Image 1 (tube, one colour):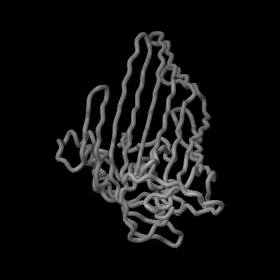
Image 2 (cartoon, one colour):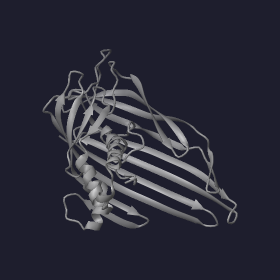
Image 3 (cartoon, rainbow, N blue to C red):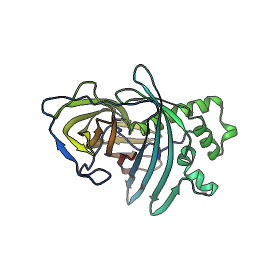
Image 4 (cartoon, rainbow, N blue to C red):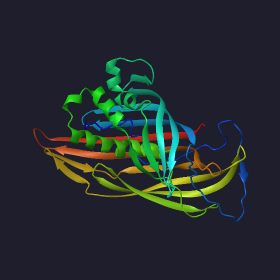
Length: 335
Protein backbone atom coordinates (compact mmCIF):
# COMPACT_ATOMS: atom_id res chain seq x y z
CA UNK A 1 0.00 0.00 0.00
CA UNK A 2 3.02 2.28 0.22
CA UNK A 3 3.62 1.97 -3.52
CA UNK A 4 3.66 5.38 -5.17
CA UNK A 5 1.01 5.76 -7.86
CA UNK A 6 3.54 7.16 -10.31
CA UNK A 7 1.33 7.06 -13.39
CA UNK A 8 -1.37 9.11 -11.67
CA UNK A 9 1.06 11.86 -10.70
CA UNK A 10 1.30 13.32 -14.15
CA UNK A 11 2.93 16.61 -13.34
CA UNK A 12 5.65 18.01 -11.20
CA UNK A 13 4.28 21.53 -11.48
CA UNK A 14 0.55 21.94 -12.14
CA UNK A 15 0.62 25.65 -12.89
CA UNK A 16 2.82 25.93 -15.98
CA UNK A 17 1.78 25.38 -19.57
CA UNK A 18 2.79 25.67 -23.19
CA UNK A 19 0.34 25.91 -26.05
CA UNK A 20 -0.01 26.44 -29.79
CA UNK A 21 -2.92 28.86 -30.14
CA UNK A 22 -3.16 29.25 -33.92
CA UNK A 23 -6.44 27.38 -34.33
CA UNK A 24 -9.25 25.95 -32.24
CA UNK A 25 -10.44 22.35 -32.45
CA UNK A 26 -12.51 23.22 -35.53
CA UNK A 27 -9.43 24.71 -37.26
CA UNK A 28 -10.93 28.20 -37.13
CA UNK A 29 -8.21 30.84 -36.97
CA UNK A 30 -8.18 32.99 -33.84
CA UNK A 31 -8.77 36.73 -34.29
CA UNK A 32 -6.76 39.12 -32.10
CA UNK A 33 -9.06 41.54 -30.24
CA UNK A 34 -8.10 44.98 -28.89
CA UNK A 35 -10.14 45.75 -25.77
CA UNK A 36 -8.40 49.10 -25.22
CA UNK A 37 -8.01 50.31 -21.65
CA UNK A 38 -11.10 48.48 -20.41
CA UNK A 39 -10.12 45.69 -18.00
CA UNK A 40 -12.09 42.44 -17.77
CA UNK A 41 -12.74 39.85 -15.08
CA UNK A 42 -11.22 36.40 -15.45
CA UNK A 43 -13.39 34.07 -13.42
CA UNK A 44 -15.00 30.65 -13.43
CA UNK A 45 -18.74 30.60 -14.12
CA UNK A 46 -19.90 27.36 -12.52
CA UNK A 47 -23.65 26.70 -12.51
CA UNK A 48 -25.56 23.77 -11.10
CA UNK A 49 -26.39 21.29 -13.85
CA UNK A 50 -23.54 22.34 -16.15
CA UNK A 51 -21.67 19.48 -17.81
CA UNK A 52 -18.38 19.67 -19.69
CA UNK A 53 -15.69 17.27 -20.94
CA UNK A 54 -11.92 17.54 -21.27
CA UNK A 55 -9.34 15.47 -23.07
CA UNK A 56 -5.98 15.21 -21.33
CA UNK A 57 -2.81 13.78 -22.88
CA UNK A 58 0.25 13.28 -20.70
CA UNK A 59 3.68 12.38 -22.04
CA UNK A 60 6.44 11.55 -19.60
CA UNK A 61 10.03 10.43 -19.92
CA UNK A 62 12.02 9.46 -16.84
CA UNK A 63 15.51 8.06 -16.85
CA UNK A 64 18.65 7.39 -14.89
CA UNK A 65 22.26 6.77 -15.82
CA UNK A 66 24.92 5.47 -13.43
CA UNK A 67 28.61 5.80 -14.32
CA UNK A 68 31.26 3.71 -12.57
CA UNK A 69 33.80 1.79 -14.63
CA UNK A 70 31.00 1.48 -17.16
CA UNK A 71 27.74 3.37 -17.75
CA UNK A 72 24.31 1.81 -17.18
CA UNK A 73 21.13 3.58 -18.29
CA UNK A 74 17.40 3.00 -17.84
CA UNK A 75 14.51 4.96 -19.33
CA UNK A 76 10.71 4.87 -19.15
CA UNK A 77 8.48 6.62 -21.69
CA UNK A 78 4.72 6.75 -21.50
CA UNK A 79 1.80 8.50 -23.14
CA UNK A 80 -1.58 8.47 -21.42
CA UNK A 81 -4.82 9.83 -22.88
CA UNK A 82 -7.77 10.51 -20.57
CA UNK A 83 -11.34 11.71 -21.05
CA UNK A 84 -12.70 13.52 -17.97
CA UNK A 85 -16.43 14.23 -17.61
CA UNK A 86 -17.44 16.95 -15.11
CA UNK A 87 -20.97 17.48 -13.77
CA UNK A 88 -21.68 20.49 -11.50
CA UNK A 89 -23.66 19.09 -8.56
CA UNK A 90 -23.92 22.28 -6.52
CA UNK A 91 -22.59 25.82 -6.11
CA UNK A 92 -22.75 27.30 -2.60
CA UNK A 93 -23.04 30.91 -1.41
CA UNK A 94 -19.24 31.33 -1.52
CA UNK A 95 -19.18 30.22 -5.19
CA UNK A 96 -17.52 26.93 -4.28
CA UNK A 97 -18.60 24.35 -6.83
CA UNK A 98 -18.93 20.63 -6.20
CA UNK A 99 -18.36 18.33 -9.17
CA UNK A 100 -19.07 14.72 -9.86
CA UNK A 101 -16.08 13.51 -11.91
CA UNK A 102 -15.83 10.41 -14.10
CA UNK A 103 -12.83 9.29 -16.13
CA UNK A 104 -14.67 7.71 -19.06
CA UNK A 105 -11.70 6.63 -21.17
CA UNK A 106 -8.01 5.85 -20.57
CA UNK A 107 -5.43 4.77 -23.12
CA UNK A 108 -1.81 4.04 -22.25
CA UNK A 109 1.23 3.45 -24.46
CA UNK A 110 4.47 2.90 -22.57
CA UNK A 111 7.94 1.49 -23.05
CA UNK A 112 10.63 0.59 -20.53
CA UNK A 113 14.13 -0.12 -21.84
CA UNK A 114 12.73 -1.24 -25.18
CA UNK A 115 9.84 -3.34 -23.82
CA UNK A 116 6.38 -2.02 -24.76
CA UNK A 117 3.20 -1.97 -22.67
CA UNK A 118 -0.33 -0.99 -23.70
CA UNK A 119 -3.65 -0.51 -21.95
CA UNK A 120 -7.13 0.47 -23.16
CA UNK A 121 -9.93 0.93 -20.65
CA UNK A 122 -13.06 -1.13 -21.23
CA UNK A 123 -11.22 -3.95 -22.96
CA UNK A 124 -10.96 -7.38 -21.35
CA UNK A 125 -7.44 -7.97 -20.04
CA UNK A 126 -5.65 -10.65 -18.06
CA UNK A 127 -5.56 -10.51 -14.27
CA UNK A 128 -1.78 -9.99 -14.38
CA UNK A 129 -2.18 -7.02 -16.72
CA UNK A 130 -4.81 -5.55 -14.41
CA UNK A 131 -2.23 -5.54 -11.63
CA UNK A 132 0.30 -3.87 -13.93
CA UNK A 133 -2.18 -1.10 -14.71
CA UNK A 134 -3.86 -0.95 -11.28
CA UNK A 135 -3.82 2.89 -11.27
CA UNK A 136 -6.02 3.02 -14.35
CA UNK A 137 -8.23 -0.03 -13.80
CA UNK A 138 -9.14 1.23 -10.35
CA UNK A 139 -10.26 4.68 -11.58
CA UNK A 140 -11.98 3.84 -14.86
CA UNK A 141 -15.65 4.91 -14.66
CA UNK A 142 -15.46 5.19 -10.84
CA UNK A 143 -17.18 8.50 -9.92
CA UNK A 144 -15.62 10.73 -7.27
CA UNK A 145 -16.26 14.27 -6.05
CA UNK A 146 -14.14 17.43 -6.03
CA UNK A 147 -14.80 20.93 -4.71
CA UNK A 148 -13.31 23.95 -6.49
CA UNK A 149 -13.37 27.55 -5.25
CA UNK A 150 -13.97 30.67 -7.32
CA UNK A 151 -10.29 31.24 -8.16
CA UNK A 152 -9.82 27.67 -9.41
CA UNK A 153 -8.23 25.95 -6.42
CA UNK A 154 -9.22 22.31 -5.91
CA UNK A 155 -9.87 22.41 -2.17
CA UNK A 156 -11.25 18.92 -1.56
CA UNK A 157 -11.38 15.45 -3.10
CA UNK A 158 -13.92 12.98 -1.68
CA UNK A 159 -15.94 9.83 -2.29
CA UNK A 160 -12.96 7.85 -3.54
CA UNK A 161 -13.84 4.78 -1.45
CA UNK A 162 -14.61 2.60 -4.46
CA UNK A 163 -11.33 3.56 -6.13
CA UNK A 164 -9.41 2.58 -2.98
CA UNK A 165 -11.32 -0.71 -2.74
CA UNK A 166 -10.44 -1.45 -6.37
CA UNK A 167 -6.75 -0.75 -5.75
CA UNK A 168 -6.66 -3.00 -2.70
CA UNK A 169 -8.50 -5.78 -4.52
CA UNK A 170 -6.32 -5.62 -7.64
CA UNK A 171 -3.15 -5.65 -5.53
CA UNK A 172 -4.38 -8.75 -3.70
CA UNK A 173 -3.95 -7.29 -0.21
CA UNK A 174 -7.59 -6.89 0.81
CA UNK A 175 -7.34 -9.12 3.90
CA UNK A 176 -4.10 -7.58 5.19
CA UNK A 177 -5.01 -3.87 5.18
CA UNK A 178 -6.20 -2.33 8.45
CA UNK A 179 -8.84 0.38 8.71
CA UNK A 180 -6.15 2.90 9.73
CA UNK A 181 -3.95 1.95 6.76
CA UNK A 182 -6.89 2.28 4.39
CA UNK A 183 -7.73 5.73 5.77
CA UNK A 184 -4.13 6.88 5.40
CA UNK A 185 -3.91 5.49 1.89
CA UNK A 186 -7.15 7.26 0.94
CA UNK A 187 -5.81 10.57 2.25
CA UNK A 188 -2.53 10.10 0.34
CA UNK A 189 -4.39 9.19 -2.84
CA UNK A 190 -6.73 12.18 -2.62
CA UNK A 191 -4.07 14.77 -1.81
CA UNK A 192 -1.02 13.38 -3.58
CA UNK A 193 -2.49 11.94 -6.78
CA UNK A 194 -6.08 12.92 -7.62
CA UNK A 195 -5.98 16.54 -6.49
CA UNK A 196 -2.94 17.54 -8.63
CA UNK A 197 -4.40 15.58 -11.54
CA UNK A 198 -7.73 17.43 -11.40
CA UNK A 199 -6.04 20.78 -10.72
CA UNK A 200 -4.87 20.66 -14.34
CA UNK A 201 -8.39 21.65 -15.45
CA UNK A 202 -8.75 24.56 -13.02
CA UNK A 203 -5.76 26.90 -13.26
CA UNK A 204 -5.85 29.51 -10.54
CA UNK A 205 -6.94 33.01 -11.55
CA UNK A 206 -6.58 36.45 -9.88
CA UNK A 207 -9.44 38.26 -8.15
CA UNK A 208 -8.63 41.62 -9.78
CA UNK A 209 -9.47 42.59 -13.37
CA UNK A 210 -6.95 42.01 -16.15
CA UNK A 211 -5.81 43.55 -19.41
CA UNK A 212 -2.92 43.05 -21.81
CA UNK A 213 0.39 42.81 -19.86
CA UNK A 214 -1.39 42.17 -16.54
CA UNK A 215 0.65 39.79 -14.34
CA UNK A 216 0.10 37.71 -11.23
CA UNK A 217 2.05 35.08 -9.31
CA UNK A 218 1.09 31.86 -7.52
CA UNK A 219 3.55 30.14 -5.20
CA UNK A 220 3.55 26.58 -3.91
CA UNK A 221 6.07 24.21 -2.27
CA UNK A 222 7.42 20.87 -3.43
CA UNK A 223 10.47 18.71 -2.77
CA UNK A 224 13.19 17.02 -4.84
CA UNK A 225 15.30 14.50 -2.93
CA UNK A 226 17.15 16.49 -0.20
CA UNK A 227 15.88 19.88 -1.41
CA UNK A 228 12.83 21.89 -0.42
CA UNK A 229 11.57 23.75 -3.49
CA UNK A 230 9.64 27.03 -3.63
CA UNK A 231 7.90 27.29 -6.99
CA UNK A 232 6.63 30.59 -8.39
CA UNK A 233 4.46 30.56 -11.49
CA UNK A 234 4.33 33.97 -13.18
CA UNK A 235 1.25 34.61 -15.34
CA UNK A 236 1.14 37.38 -17.96
CA UNK A 237 -1.69 38.29 -20.35
CA UNK A 238 -0.32 38.29 -23.91
CA UNK A 239 -3.50 39.31 -25.75
CA UNK A 240 -7.22 38.64 -26.21
CA UNK A 241 -8.65 36.57 -29.04
CA UNK A 242 -12.03 35.73 -30.55
CA UNK A 243 -12.67 32.05 -31.32
CA UNK A 244 -16.17 31.04 -32.42
CA UNK A 245 -17.36 34.49 -31.25
CA UNK A 246 -16.13 33.81 -27.70
CA UNK A 247 -13.57 36.04 -25.96
CA UNK A 248 -10.39 34.19 -25.00
CA UNK A 249 -7.51 35.38 -22.80
CA UNK A 250 -4.13 34.20 -24.07
CA UNK A 251 -1.86 33.95 -21.02
CA UNK A 252 1.84 33.09 -20.89
CA UNK A 253 3.43 31.37 -17.92
CA UNK A 254 6.94 31.04 -16.58
CA UNK A 255 8.16 28.86 -13.73
CA UNK A 256 10.82 30.19 -11.38
CA UNK A 257 12.21 28.08 -8.54
CA UNK A 258 14.35 28.51 -5.45
CA UNK A 259 15.63 25.65 -3.33
CA UNK A 260 17.30 25.06 -0.01
CA UNK A 261 18.61 22.08 1.92
CA UNK A 262 21.85 20.29 2.76
CA UNK A 263 23.35 18.74 -0.36
CA UNK A 264 25.31 16.05 1.50
CA UNK A 265 24.14 12.99 3.40
CA UNK A 266 25.34 9.52 4.43
CA UNK A 267 23.22 6.39 4.35
CA UNK A 268 24.40 2.83 5.08
CA UNK A 269 28.02 3.75 4.65
CA UNK A 270 27.52 5.57 1.33
CA UNK A 271 28.24 9.30 1.08
CA UNK A 272 25.94 11.25 -1.26
CA UNK A 273 26.71 14.67 -2.74
CA UNK A 274 23.74 16.16 -4.57
CA UNK A 275 24.23 18.69 -7.34
CA UNK A 276 21.95 21.68 -7.88
CA UNK A 277 18.60 20.63 -9.37
CA UNK A 278 17.97 21.98 -12.86
CA UNK A 279 14.25 22.76 -13.09
CA UNK A 280 12.39 24.63 -15.82
CA UNK A 281 8.85 25.16 -17.06
CA UNK A 282 7.09 27.68 -19.30
CA UNK A 283 4.26 28.13 -21.76
CA UNK A 284 0.73 29.49 -22.07
CA UNK A 285 -2.97 28.77 -21.54
CA UNK A 286 -6.21 29.88 -23.17
CA UNK A 287 -9.03 30.90 -20.83
CA UNK A 288 -12.56 31.23 -22.23
CA UNK A 289 -13.87 34.42 -20.58
CA UNK A 290 -17.42 34.02 -21.94
CA UNK A 291 -17.84 30.44 -20.82
CA UNK A 292 -15.80 30.83 -17.64
CA UNK A 293 -13.67 27.73 -18.23
CA UNK A 294 -10.16 26.82 -19.26
CA UNK A 295 -10.28 26.28 -23.03
CA UNK A 296 -6.90 24.78 -23.75
CA UNK A 297 -3.48 24.31 -22.15
CA UNK A 298 -0.43 22.11 -22.12
CA UNK A 299 2.39 21.65 -19.65
CA UNK A 300 6.10 21.32 -20.30
CA UNK A 301 8.47 20.85 -17.36
CA UNK A 302 11.97 19.44 -17.00
CA UNK A 303 14.00 18.27 -14.03
CA UNK A 304 17.61 17.04 -13.93
CA UNK A 305 19.86 16.32 -10.98
CA UNK A 306 23.30 14.72 -10.58
CA UNK A 307 24.48 12.75 -7.54
CA UNK A 308 28.03 11.73 -6.59
CA UNK A 309 28.13 8.52 -4.51
CA UNK A 310 31.22 7.34 -2.61
CA UNK A 311 31.83 4.37 -0.32
CA UNK A 312 34.91 2.81 1.28
CA UNK A 313 33.54 -0.61 2.33
CA UNK A 314 33.44 -3.39 1.41
CA UNK A 315 35.72 -1.80 -1.21
CA UNK A 316 36.37 1.77 -2.39
CA UNK A 317 33.68 2.83 -4.86
CA UNK A 318 32.77 6.04 -6.67
CA UNK A 319 29.75 6.45 -8.93
CA UNK A 320 27.98 9.34 -10.59
CA UNK A 321 24.23 9.15 -11.09
CA UNK A 322 22.06 11.43 -13.23
CA UNK A 323 18.26 11.45 -12.94
CA UNK A 324 15.97 13.28 -15.33
CA UNK A 325 12.25 13.77 -15.82
CA UNK A 326 10.49 15.47 -18.73
CA UNK A 327 6.70 15.97 -18.62
CA UNK A 328 4.45 17.37 -21.34
CA UNK A 329 0.73 17.52 -20.55
CA UNK A 330 -2.02 18.98 -22.72
CA UNK A 331 -5.71 19.47 -22.07
CA UNK A 332 -8.54 20.64 -24.28
CA UNK A 333 -12.20 21.43 -23.62
CA UNK A 334 -14.00 19.18 -26.13
CA UNK A 335 -17.63 19.81 -25.11
